[in-house]
Length: 504
Image 1: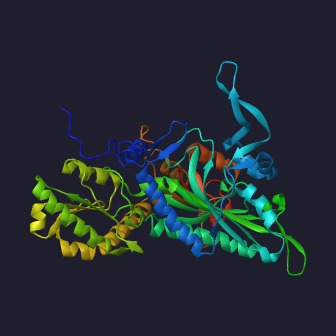
Image 2: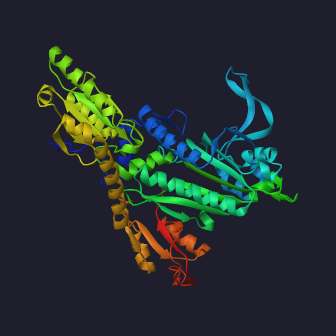
Protein backbone atom coordinates (compact mmCIF):
# COMPACT_ATOMS: atom_id res chain seq x y z
CA UNK A 1 0.00 0.00 0.00
CA UNK A 2 1.46 3.36 -1.06
CA UNK A 3 2.00 6.08 1.52
CA UNK A 4 -0.34 9.08 1.34
CA UNK A 5 1.17 12.18 -0.27
CA UNK A 6 2.09 14.73 2.40
CA UNK A 7 2.54 17.72 0.12
CA UNK A 8 0.79 19.22 -2.87
CA UNK A 9 3.83 19.12 -5.16
CA UNK A 10 5.45 15.91 -6.27
CA UNK A 11 8.37 15.39 -6.54
CA UNK A 12 9.64 17.47 -3.64
CA UNK A 13 12.55 19.90 -3.87
CA UNK A 14 14.83 17.33 -2.27
CA UNK A 15 13.76 14.55 -4.64
CA UNK A 16 14.04 16.36 -7.97
CA UNK A 17 14.50 20.13 -7.90
CA UNK A 18 14.18 20.78 -11.68
CA UNK A 19 10.97 18.76 -11.93
CA UNK A 20 9.66 20.33 -8.70
CA UNK A 21 10.10 23.73 -10.34
CA UNK A 22 8.05 22.69 -13.37
CA UNK A 23 5.32 21.22 -11.16
CA UNK A 24 5.06 24.41 -9.06
CA UNK A 25 4.47 26.39 -12.27
CA UNK A 26 1.84 23.89 -13.37
CA UNK A 27 0.06 23.71 -10.00
CA UNK A 28 -0.01 27.49 -9.62
CA UNK A 29 -1.26 27.90 -13.21
CA UNK A 30 1.53 30.35 -14.04
CA UNK A 31 2.49 29.24 -17.55
CA UNK A 32 2.68 26.33 -19.94
CA UNK A 33 4.63 25.34 -23.02
CA UNK A 34 3.30 26.65 -26.30
CA UNK A 35 2.62 24.92 -29.61
CA UNK A 36 5.40 27.15 -30.93
CA UNK A 37 8.54 25.21 -29.98
CA UNK A 38 10.55 26.76 -27.17
CA UNK A 39 7.94 29.43 -26.36
CA UNK A 40 5.53 29.72 -23.45
CA UNK A 41 1.98 30.80 -22.75
CA UNK A 42 1.89 32.96 -19.62
CA UNK A 43 -1.41 32.28 -17.87
CA UNK A 44 -3.43 34.99 -16.07
CA UNK A 45 -2.04 34.36 -12.57
CA UNK A 46 1.54 34.33 -13.88
CA UNK A 47 0.92 37.41 -15.99
CA UNK A 48 -0.62 39.23 -13.01
CA UNK A 49 2.67 38.71 -11.13
CA UNK A 50 4.61 40.05 -14.15
CA UNK A 51 2.22 43.03 -14.37
CA UNK A 52 2.92 43.85 -10.72
CA UNK A 53 6.65 43.65 -11.42
CA UNK A 54 6.17 45.92 -14.45
CA UNK A 55 4.15 48.45 -12.50
CA UNK A 56 6.73 48.79 -9.73
CA UNK A 57 9.73 48.89 -12.05
CA UNK A 58 8.04 51.33 -14.42
CA UNK A 59 7.47 53.73 -11.53
CA UNK A 60 11.09 53.33 -10.41
CA UNK A 61 12.33 54.08 -13.94
CA UNK A 62 10.18 57.19 -14.21
CA UNK A 63 11.21 58.33 -10.74
CA UNK A 64 14.81 58.30 -12.01
CA UNK A 65 13.96 60.46 -15.03
CA UNK A 66 13.27 57.87 -17.73
CA UNK A 67 10.38 57.77 -20.22
CA UNK A 68 8.92 54.90 -22.25
CA UNK A 69 9.00 54.49 -26.04
CA UNK A 70 8.78 51.62 -28.51
CA UNK A 71 11.12 50.51 -31.30
CA UNK A 72 10.69 47.90 -34.08
CA UNK A 73 10.93 44.17 -33.47
CA UNK A 74 12.73 43.77 -36.83
CA UNK A 75 16.38 44.82 -37.08
CA UNK A 76 18.22 44.97 -40.45
CA UNK A 77 20.99 42.38 -40.48
CA UNK A 78 23.53 45.05 -41.46
CA UNK A 79 22.88 46.83 -38.14
CA UNK A 80 23.86 43.74 -36.16
CA UNK A 81 26.95 43.21 -38.33
CA UNK A 82 28.36 46.67 -37.64
CA UNK A 83 29.52 45.88 -34.08
CA UNK A 84 31.87 42.87 -34.23
CA UNK A 85 31.60 41.74 -30.60
CA UNK A 86 27.84 42.18 -30.71
CA UNK A 87 27.30 40.01 -33.78
CA UNK A 88 29.66 37.35 -32.42
CA UNK A 89 27.81 37.30 -29.12
CA UNK A 90 24.31 36.99 -30.57
CA UNK A 91 24.77 35.28 -33.98
CA UNK A 92 23.88 31.78 -32.78
CA UNK A 93 20.72 33.03 -31.02
CA UNK A 94 19.27 35.10 -33.87
CA UNK A 95 15.98 34.30 -35.57
CA UNK A 96 16.14 35.57 -39.15
CA UNK A 97 13.32 36.71 -41.45
CA UNK A 98 14.23 36.23 -45.11
CA UNK A 99 10.86 36.41 -46.95
CA UNK A 100 7.98 38.83 -46.79
CA UNK A 101 4.95 36.73 -47.74
CA UNK A 102 3.51 33.25 -48.35
CA UNK A 103 1.96 31.88 -51.52
CA UNK A 104 0.46 28.55 -52.64
CA UNK A 105 3.03 26.02 -53.79
CA UNK A 106 2.72 23.31 -56.42
CA UNK A 107 1.12 20.89 -53.94
CA UNK A 108 -1.31 23.51 -52.63
CA UNK A 109 0.66 24.12 -49.43
CA UNK A 110 1.88 27.58 -48.50
CA UNK A 111 5.53 28.33 -49.24
CA UNK A 112 7.69 31.44 -48.65
CA UNK A 113 7.92 33.81 -51.56
CA UNK A 114 9.30 37.25 -52.24
CA UNK A 115 12.76 37.22 -50.60
CA UNK A 116 13.71 40.42 -48.79
CA UNK A 117 16.49 42.59 -50.18
CA UNK A 118 18.06 42.43 -46.72
CA UNK A 119 17.15 39.86 -44.05
CA UNK A 120 15.74 41.08 -40.76
CA UNK A 121 16.78 39.84 -37.33
CA UNK A 122 13.91 39.35 -34.88
CA UNK A 123 14.92 41.54 -31.94
CA UNK A 124 17.37 39.70 -29.60
CA UNK A 125 18.19 43.09 -28.00
CA UNK A 126 17.86 46.61 -29.41
CA UNK A 127 21.18 48.44 -29.01
CA UNK A 128 21.79 48.65 -32.76
CA UNK A 129 18.41 49.83 -34.03
CA UNK A 130 17.91 52.21 -31.11
CA UNK A 131 21.43 53.55 -31.68
CA UNK A 132 20.58 54.25 -35.33
CA UNK A 133 17.47 56.12 -34.16
CA UNK A 134 19.42 58.15 -31.60
CA UNK A 135 21.86 59.13 -34.37
CA UNK A 136 18.96 60.90 -36.11
CA UNK A 137 17.75 62.54 -32.91
CA UNK A 138 21.06 63.89 -31.61
CA UNK A 139 22.84 66.88 -33.13
CA UNK A 140 23.73 69.06 -30.15
CA UNK A 141 24.62 68.65 -26.48
CA UNK A 142 21.21 70.23 -25.88
CA UNK A 143 19.61 66.99 -27.16
CA UNK A 144 21.23 65.00 -24.34
CA UNK A 145 20.77 63.02 -22.24
CA UNK A 146 18.29 60.61 -23.82
CA UNK A 147 16.78 58.40 -21.12
CA UNK A 148 14.43 55.86 -22.68
CA UNK A 149 13.02 52.50 -21.65
CA UNK A 150 10.89 50.12 -23.66
CA UNK A 151 8.71 47.19 -22.58
CA UNK A 152 8.89 44.55 -25.29
CA UNK A 153 9.36 40.93 -26.27
CA UNK A 154 12.62 39.52 -27.60
CA UNK A 155 13.59 36.33 -29.39
CA UNK A 156 16.74 34.31 -28.73
CA UNK A 157 16.76 30.95 -30.43
CA UNK A 158 17.23 28.74 -27.38
CA UNK A 159 17.16 24.99 -28.00
CA UNK A 160 17.08 23.83 -24.35
CA UNK A 161 14.29 25.77 -22.72
CA UNK A 162 12.76 26.05 -19.25
CA UNK A 163 9.64 28.07 -18.47
CA UNK A 164 10.44 31.66 -17.41
CA UNK A 165 14.16 30.96 -17.07
CA UNK A 166 15.06 30.36 -20.70
CA UNK A 167 12.60 30.43 -23.60
CA UNK A 168 12.92 31.31 -27.27
CA UNK A 169 10.65 34.32 -26.76
CA UNK A 170 10.36 36.21 -23.49
CA UNK A 171 9.17 39.54 -22.16
CA UNK A 172 11.44 42.22 -20.77
CA UNK A 173 12.28 45.85 -20.45
CA UNK A 174 15.38 47.37 -21.95
CA UNK A 175 16.65 50.81 -21.07
CA UNK A 176 18.86 52.68 -23.55
CA UNK A 177 20.46 56.00 -22.69
CA UNK A 178 22.83 58.43 -24.40
CA UNK A 179 24.99 60.98 -22.57
CA UNK A 180 27.44 63.79 -23.28
CA UNK A 181 30.12 62.56 -20.86
CA UNK A 182 31.61 59.30 -19.72
CA UNK A 183 31.03 60.19 -16.07
CA UNK A 184 27.31 60.74 -16.62
CA UNK A 185 26.94 57.42 -18.46
CA UNK A 186 28.84 55.57 -15.73
CA UNK A 187 26.57 57.10 -13.06
CA UNK A 188 23.54 55.98 -15.06
CA UNK A 189 24.89 52.42 -15.27
CA UNK A 190 25.40 52.20 -11.51
CA UNK A 191 22.10 53.95 -10.75
CA UNK A 192 20.10 51.38 -12.69
CA UNK A 193 21.96 48.51 -11.04
CA UNK A 194 20.90 50.02 -7.71
CA UNK A 195 17.30 50.24 -8.95
CA UNK A 196 17.32 46.53 -9.81
CA UNK A 197 18.84 45.60 -6.44
CA UNK A 198 16.23 47.73 -4.65
CA UNK A 199 13.43 45.99 -6.55
CA UNK A 200 14.84 42.49 -6.01
CA UNK A 201 15.33 42.91 -2.28
CA UNK A 202 12.42 45.14 -1.28
CA UNK A 203 9.72 43.75 -3.59
CA UNK A 204 10.81 40.25 -4.57
CA UNK A 205 12.27 39.64 -1.07
CA UNK A 206 15.26 38.15 -2.91
CA UNK A 207 18.69 39.13 -1.55
CA UNK A 208 21.22 39.91 -4.26
CA UNK A 209 24.92 40.57 -4.72
CA UNK A 210 25.78 43.61 -6.85
CA UNK A 211 28.92 43.08 -8.88
CA UNK A 212 30.83 43.54 -12.10
CA UNK A 213 31.05 40.78 -14.67
CA UNK A 214 34.45 39.54 -15.82
CA UNK A 215 35.58 40.05 -19.41
CA UNK A 216 34.46 36.55 -20.37
CA UNK A 217 30.94 37.14 -18.99
CA UNK A 218 30.55 40.70 -20.29
CA UNK A 219 27.67 41.75 -22.57
CA UNK A 220 28.84 41.63 -26.22
CA UNK A 221 30.10 45.11 -27.14
CA UNK A 222 30.06 46.54 -23.61
CA UNK A 223 32.98 48.18 -21.79
CA UNK A 224 31.61 47.06 -18.41
CA UNK A 225 28.69 44.86 -17.38
CA UNK A 226 27.24 44.96 -13.88
CA UNK A 227 24.73 42.44 -12.53
CA UNK A 228 22.72 41.38 -9.53
CA UNK A 229 23.16 37.73 -8.59
CA UNK A 230 20.80 35.75 -6.35
CA UNK A 231 21.00 32.28 -4.79
CA UNK A 232 18.13 29.91 -5.48
CA UNK A 233 17.08 27.16 -3.06
CA UNK A 234 19.16 24.58 -4.93
CA UNK A 235 22.14 26.87 -4.25
CA UNK A 236 22.60 27.78 -7.91
CA UNK A 237 22.99 31.41 -8.95
CA UNK A 238 20.49 33.34 -11.01
CA UNK A 239 21.55 36.48 -12.86
CA UNK A 240 18.50 38.62 -12.14
CA UNK A 241 19.34 41.89 -13.89
CA UNK A 242 22.16 43.56 -15.82
CA UNK A 243 23.31 47.12 -16.47
CA UNK A 244 25.88 47.81 -19.19
CA UNK A 245 28.27 50.73 -19.70
CA UNK A 246 28.71 50.65 -23.47
CA UNK A 247 31.27 53.46 -23.67
CA UNK A 248 31.40 54.87 -27.20
CA UNK A 249 31.47 51.47 -28.92
CA UNK A 250 27.92 51.59 -30.27
CA UNK A 251 27.84 55.35 -30.81
CA UNK A 252 30.89 55.16 -33.09
CA UNK A 253 29.33 52.30 -35.06
CA UNK A 254 25.93 54.01 -35.28
CA UNK A 255 27.31 57.57 -35.68
CA UNK A 256 25.62 58.98 -32.58
CA UNK A 257 27.44 62.34 -32.54
CA UNK A 258 26.82 65.79 -31.12
CA UNK A 259 28.38 69.23 -31.02
CA UNK A 260 29.49 70.23 -27.54
CA UNK A 261 29.31 73.73 -26.03
CA UNK A 262 32.51 74.68 -27.91
CA UNK A 263 31.23 73.46 -31.27
CA UNK A 264 33.46 70.36 -31.23
CA UNK A 265 31.99 67.11 -32.57
CA UNK A 266 31.93 64.28 -30.01
CA UNK A 267 30.54 60.74 -29.83
CA UNK A 268 27.91 59.99 -27.23
CA UNK A 269 28.46 57.70 -24.26
CA UNK A 270 25.72 55.08 -24.04
CA UNK A 271 24.26 52.53 -21.62
CA UNK A 272 21.72 49.73 -21.71
CA UNK A 273 20.07 47.77 -18.91
CA UNK A 274 17.31 45.19 -18.55
CA UNK A 275 15.37 42.58 -16.62
CA UNK A 276 12.96 39.98 -17.96
CA UNK A 277 10.26 37.45 -17.09
CA UNK A 278 13.12 35.33 -15.73
CA UNK A 279 12.40 37.30 -12.53
CA UNK A 280 9.21 35.25 -12.17
CA UNK A 281 11.36 32.11 -12.25
CA UNK A 282 13.64 33.67 -9.64
CA UNK A 283 10.67 34.42 -7.40
CA UNK A 284 9.47 30.82 -7.68
CA UNK A 285 12.85 29.29 -6.85
CA UNK A 286 13.66 31.70 -4.03
CA UNK A 287 10.51 31.26 -1.96
CA UNK A 288 8.30 28.33 -2.99
CA UNK A 289 8.00 25.07 -1.07
CA UNK A 290 6.66 21.54 -1.52
CA UNK A 291 3.07 22.80 -1.37
CA UNK A 292 3.56 25.17 -4.31
CA UNK A 293 4.16 28.83 -4.99
CA UNK A 294 4.85 31.43 -2.30
CA UNK A 295 4.53 35.06 -3.43
CA UNK A 296 5.99 38.01 -1.51
CA UNK A 297 2.98 40.19 -0.60
CA UNK A 298 4.38 43.27 -2.36
CA UNK A 299 4.04 41.43 -5.69
CA UNK A 300 1.02 39.21 -4.97
CA UNK A 301 -1.96 39.70 -7.32
CA UNK A 302 -4.21 39.07 -4.29
CA UNK A 303 -3.20 39.47 -0.66
CA UNK A 304 -6.20 37.76 0.94
CA UNK A 305 -8.63 35.16 -0.33
CA UNK A 306 -11.86 34.78 1.65
CA UNK A 307 -13.34 31.27 1.55
CA UNK A 308 -17.08 31.14 2.45
CA UNK A 309 -18.23 27.92 4.13
CA UNK A 310 -21.94 27.03 4.30
CA UNK A 311 -24.33 24.08 3.93
CA UNK A 312 -27.69 25.70 3.25
CA UNK A 313 -29.12 28.61 1.28
CA UNK A 314 -29.89 30.40 4.53
CA UNK A 315 -26.30 30.00 5.69
CA UNK A 316 -25.05 31.07 2.25
CA UNK A 317 -26.87 34.40 2.41
CA UNK A 318 -25.54 35.14 5.88
CA UNK A 319 -21.98 34.02 5.15
CA UNK A 320 -21.66 35.87 1.84
CA UNK A 321 -23.01 39.06 3.38
CA UNK A 322 -20.40 38.79 6.13
CA UNK A 323 -17.64 38.06 3.58
CA UNK A 324 -18.58 41.07 1.42
CA UNK A 325 -18.49 43.45 4.37
CA UNK A 326 -15.19 41.93 5.54
CA UNK A 327 -13.76 42.35 2.04
CA UNK A 328 -14.71 46.04 2.05
CA UNK A 329 -13.07 46.59 5.44
CA UNK A 330 -9.88 44.84 4.35
CA UNK A 331 -9.68 46.75 1.07
CA UNK A 332 -9.88 50.01 3.01
CA UNK A 333 -6.49 49.11 4.52
CA UNK A 334 -3.26 50.11 2.80
CA UNK A 335 -0.28 47.94 1.99
CA UNK A 336 2.84 48.86 0.02
CA UNK A 337 1.38 52.08 -1.30
CA UNK A 338 -1.96 50.62 -2.39
CA UNK A 339 -5.00 48.92 -1.02
CA UNK A 340 -5.07 45.39 0.31
CA UNK A 341 -6.21 43.24 -2.62
CA UNK A 342 -8.96 40.78 -1.63
CA UNK A 343 -11.00 38.16 -3.46
CA UNK A 344 -13.96 36.02 -2.36
CA UNK A 345 -13.90 32.49 -3.77
CA UNK A 346 -17.50 31.27 -3.83
CA UNK A 347 -17.03 28.60 -6.48
CA UNK A 348 -19.02 25.38 -6.08
CA UNK A 349 -16.07 23.33 -4.85
CA UNK A 350 -15.30 21.55 -1.62
CA UNK A 351 -13.67 23.85 0.93
CA UNK A 352 -10.50 21.79 1.19
CA UNK A 353 -10.05 21.70 -2.57
CA UNK A 354 -10.44 25.47 -2.84
CA UNK A 355 -8.02 26.08 0.02
CA UNK A 356 -5.36 23.89 -1.61
CA UNK A 357 -5.72 25.69 -4.93
CA UNK A 358 -4.91 29.00 -3.25
CA UNK A 359 -2.09 27.43 -1.27
CA UNK A 360 -0.55 26.20 -4.53
CA UNK A 361 -1.00 29.67 -6.07
CA UNK A 362 0.79 31.30 -3.16
CA UNK A 363 -1.89 33.73 -1.90
CA UNK A 364 -0.34 35.13 1.32
CA UNK A 365 -3.45 34.88 3.55
CA UNK A 366 -6.56 32.67 3.51
CA UNK A 367 -9.58 33.55 5.65
CA UNK A 368 -12.24 30.85 6.05
CA UNK A 369 -15.65 32.09 7.16
CA UNK A 370 -18.54 29.88 8.24
CA UNK A 371 -21.59 30.30 10.51
CA UNK A 372 -19.58 29.33 13.62
CA UNK A 373 -16.94 31.97 12.76
CA UNK A 374 -19.65 34.60 12.27
CA UNK A 375 -21.10 33.76 15.66
CA UNK A 376 -17.70 34.63 17.15
CA UNK A 377 -17.25 37.63 14.80
CA UNK A 378 -14.02 35.96 13.67
CA UNK A 379 -12.25 34.19 10.80
CA UNK A 380 -10.09 31.09 10.59
CA UNK A 381 -6.83 32.47 9.19
CA UNK A 382 -4.12 30.59 7.30
CA UNK A 383 -0.66 31.96 6.46
CA UNK A 384 1.00 30.71 3.29
CA UNK A 385 4.57 31.40 4.41
CA UNK A 386 4.56 29.46 7.69
CA UNK A 387 1.48 27.28 7.25
CA UNK A 388 0.14 28.54 10.59
CA UNK A 389 -3.66 28.39 10.97
CA UNK A 390 -5.72 29.85 13.81
CA UNK A 391 -8.90 31.67 14.69
CA UNK A 392 -8.63 35.47 14.74
CA UNK A 393 -11.21 38.08 15.68
CA UNK A 394 -12.51 40.07 12.75
CA UNK A 395 -11.54 43.46 14.18
CA UNK A 396 -8.03 42.22 14.98
CA UNK A 397 -7.65 40.74 11.49
CA UNK A 398 -8.70 43.96 9.77
CA UNK A 399 -6.55 46.20 11.97
CA UNK A 400 -3.42 44.05 11.65
CA UNK A 401 -3.64 42.79 8.04
CA UNK A 402 -1.14 45.37 6.75
CA UNK A 403 1.42 44.64 9.46
CA UNK A 404 0.90 40.91 8.96
CA UNK A 405 1.63 41.23 5.23
CA UNK A 406 4.74 43.27 6.05
CA UNK A 407 5.83 40.57 8.49
CA UNK A 408 5.44 37.94 5.75
CA UNK A 409 7.38 40.09 3.26
CA UNK A 410 10.27 40.64 5.67
CA UNK A 411 10.26 37.02 6.82
CA UNK A 412 10.64 35.74 3.27
CA UNK A 413 13.63 38.02 2.69
CA UNK A 414 15.27 36.96 5.96
CA UNK A 415 14.72 33.29 5.16
CA UNK A 416 16.31 33.66 1.72
CA UNK A 417 19.23 35.65 3.09
CA UNK A 418 19.88 33.04 5.78
CA UNK A 419 20.01 30.32 3.11
CA UNK A 420 22.56 32.31 1.13
CA UNK A 421 24.71 32.98 4.19
CA UNK A 422 24.67 29.30 5.15
CA UNK A 423 25.90 28.26 1.71
CA UNK A 424 28.49 30.95 0.96
CA UNK A 425 32.11 30.21 1.86
CA UNK A 426 35.59 31.60 1.33
CA UNK A 427 37.71 28.96 -0.40
CA UNK A 428 41.48 29.24 -0.88
CA UNK A 429 42.38 25.65 -1.75
CA UNK A 430 41.82 24.18 -5.21
CA UNK A 431 40.98 20.69 -3.95
CA UNK A 432 38.41 22.18 -1.59
CA UNK A 433 36.98 24.18 -4.48
CA UNK A 434 36.60 21.07 -6.66
CA UNK A 435 35.01 19.15 -3.81
CA UNK A 436 32.67 22.03 -3.02
CA UNK A 437 31.21 21.99 -6.54
CA UNK A 438 31.26 18.22 -7.09
CA UNK A 439 27.77 16.70 -6.70
CA UNK A 440 27.54 14.66 -3.52
CA UNK A 441 25.29 12.16 -5.32
CA UNK A 442 25.80 11.24 -8.98
CA UNK A 443 22.04 11.06 -9.45
CA UNK A 444 21.49 14.44 -7.77
CA UNK A 445 23.66 17.02 -9.61
CA UNK A 446 21.95 19.89 -7.80
CA UNK A 447 23.43 18.85 -4.44
CA UNK A 448 26.65 20.87 -4.31
CA UNK A 449 28.16 23.67 -2.25
CA UNK A 450 26.63 27.03 -3.18
CA UNK A 451 28.57 30.30 -3.56
CA UNK A 452 32.35 30.39 -3.21
CA UNK A 453 34.37 33.58 -2.68
CA UNK A 454 37.78 33.08 -4.25
CA UNK A 455 40.81 34.99 -5.48
CA UNK A 456 41.28 34.53 -9.22
CA UNK A 457 43.02 35.67 -12.37
CA UNK A 458 41.01 35.32 -15.57
CA UNK A 459 42.93 33.08 -18.00
CA UNK A 460 41.94 30.50 -20.65
CA UNK A 461 43.24 27.71 -18.37
CA UNK A 462 41.00 28.84 -15.52
CA UNK A 463 38.02 29.07 -17.88
CA UNK A 464 38.64 25.51 -19.07
CA UNK A 465 38.75 24.14 -15.53
CA UNK A 466 35.56 25.98 -14.56
CA UNK A 467 33.85 24.66 -17.68
CA UNK A 468 34.61 21.08 -16.62
CA UNK A 469 33.12 21.74 -13.19
CA UNK A 470 30.15 23.59 -14.75
CA UNK A 471 30.99 26.59 -12.58
CA UNK A 472 31.15 30.25 -13.62
CA UNK A 473 32.49 33.46 -12.13
CA UNK A 474 29.21 35.20 -11.33
CA UNK A 475 30.66 38.62 -10.53
CA UNK A 476 33.28 40.60 -8.66
CA UNK A 477 31.24 42.15 -5.81
CA UNK A 478 31.20 45.94 -5.66
CA UNK A 479 32.61 47.75 -2.66
CA UNK A 480 34.77 44.93 -1.37
CA UNK A 481 38.11 45.81 0.18
CA UNK A 482 41.15 45.34 -2.06
CA UNK A 483 43.28 42.81 -0.19
CA UNK A 484 46.26 41.05 -1.73
CA UNK A 485 45.97 37.32 -2.27
CA UNK A 486 46.85 34.51 -4.68
CA UNK A 487 44.76 33.13 -7.52
CA UNK A 488 43.15 29.90 -6.38
CA UNK A 489 43.87 28.27 -9.74
CA UNK A 490 47.26 29.63 -10.87
CA UNK A 491 48.90 30.93 -7.70
CA UNK A 492 49.47 34.33 -9.31
CA UNK A 493 49.23 37.37 -7.04
CA UNK A 494 45.94 39.31 -7.32
CA UNK A 495 43.52 41.45 -5.38
CA UNK A 496 40.53 40.29 -7.44
CA UNK A 497 38.06 38.17 -5.50
CA UNK A 498 34.92 36.87 -7.18
CA UNK A 499 31.77 34.89 -6.48
CA UNK A 500 31.81 31.45 -8.11
CA UNK A 501 28.73 29.28 -8.53
CA UNK A 502 26.81 26.93 -10.73
CA UNK A 503 24.10 28.93 -12.43
CA UNK A 504 20.95 29.06 -14.51
